[in-house]
Image 1 (cartoon, one colour):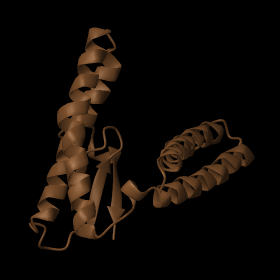
Image 2 (cartoon, rainbow, N blue to C red; image 1 turned 180 degrees about the horizontal axis):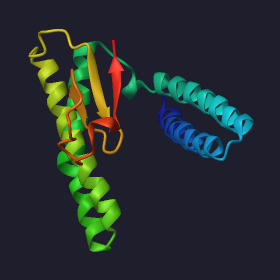
Image 3 (cartoon, helix red, strand yellow; image 1 turned 180 degrees about the vertical axis):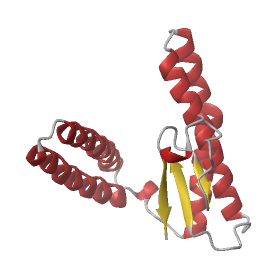
Length: 168
């Protein structure tokens, strides 16, 4: 694929992915305000944006979904890079600017990403031998637990009720 087209596809992917999440937030606000039709409209268009993001992602050569071993390795490397290199800089910048809430968010994200890397690493090393029937995702910070949600999130301290199950 030619360079400009590949760059444009990646830019489209980022824009569509952002639109998807922004529209879901708008839908939640409409639902909170008890405006069901607008909630439905935002969710429908969010789904369309998800389709666009997926299609552009599938066309970008460097982001093409490959075999599972390669996908695990790439995911492991990305999580490791983000947790070790990206978020520490973000934390430092937020603290320097006195943005405490952002610094806390970046710290939680860094720590959760570190746990994600460990899960990927275990999968790569074939340490996950027994079948895991479910994962539990902290809805505050993004920490992922296997099998059972902890009583308290080890990253942000959220109670067990703040975990969402992802099941087979």
